[in-house]
Image (cartoon, rainbow, N blue to C red; front, side, top):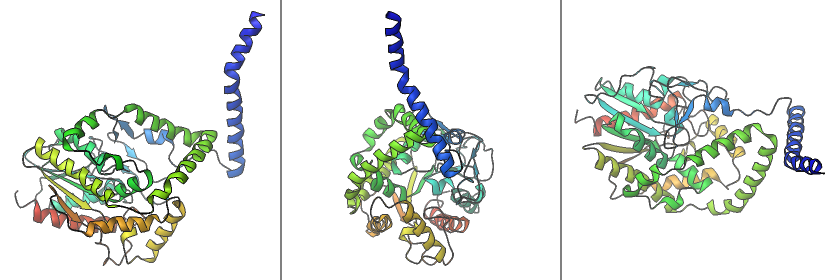
Length: 380
């Protein structure tokens, strides 16, 4: 009798797992016969962890001397490579430790700074900018802190994490679009507009590693387990249906949050280091470009097919950018608006609706180079 009870207890525990396993096998077979391929997505988790690592505070970085795999995306022509610091390098895989006698620049931003869309490491914006600036001074070094998906808050965290080692003379950021995307599709930063220099370090030091770990686990599950992917997307779509109505009209709050994070970076750097300069370049984006080439129109149309859950994304992005045409007062950092630099550029500057091609990178780098030479290199 006791053996039967024990058997039923064991069966009660393991039977649900057996049923789920059989259902998953059936779902995998169904997917295979329907799509004629196994349940694999473009960015497999093991590919990502092959060149990503998490620092002691939970922030993701690239691994040293690794290949950042991008060619499996149809829009990107080349992989990128990291150097001995774990940064996308500017053409040389090895760099000496930062020399305080040189003029060192940290370049912050998202995937456009990282280099997606470039045909090689030498054609990223940081690499082209470094080449241009070295016409003025051979001892100018640019360290590419660009990381896909980064917004101004993430950039804040990277400054806190690595500035002590790289000892920059100038910190620059090329961003704007990812901040809009974060506010618009996730609403995850609206409640953080109160962040000031005094508590930014506290927030950074108390970031939850568990949150990042669960995020990676969720990514792995959605890319490998058919049933998990199905129910996850059902819940996600339900949540988006409930929230998307809030994003059809953008308020100035989005702009204020964006400015506040950079204000915080500039304040912290000035308190921590003597004489450091901080500059923000508000990046061009295809949605804001008024005169688009035929190829760029196709990029926008393809993008609209992918994201239709939040009303007119590109129209609202355009409105968000419009806010920055107003003059800013009381900023403790320099803000340069590059949003319209492609208006008189008659060639296609984009590889998709977000990322620039080599010609677009060069155009941006030359513009930034002239601004930096005029405003920041007169002192060296």
